[in-house]
Figure 1 (cartoon, rainbow, N blue to C red):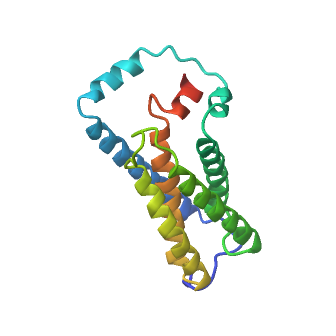
Figure 2 (cartoon, rainbow, N blue to C red):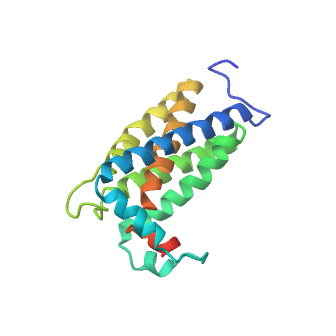
Length: 188
């Protein structure tokens, strides 16, 4: 496949396998770094998990309804970006559907990044390490779009896949840590 011609007509299973492998490695590294960053609290985290009497249930959406507007916008835009991103990564590339969904995904990712700048629940009043993902997203999104407009398909694909894995999957894992809103909604 030429770098300048979009792939059409088939789903690229090799690309899906690469995405899954990259996501698995990224998740493993994220868990390891988070574990190391927790330091002495890592043991406390394990004891907290072992004491949970968790049973499957529907998410407690009242917690989201009671959250700030920035958090509500962030959760909505991340949800849209996850769904559309999954469709884009597994679907046909380069056609009109891909372009329309792609622009929608870019808007959702930008909304997620910008709204995250107003969320300070990890370090009240300060930015946290998660805000680095927002900065990276706001720089990489226009770069990825520019690469698509210049027909540099391979660079565009790698940039957008990196944003999906890093900006949504890896950063998203931290939202499900105990004490965070998503943890309380789904597991509390």
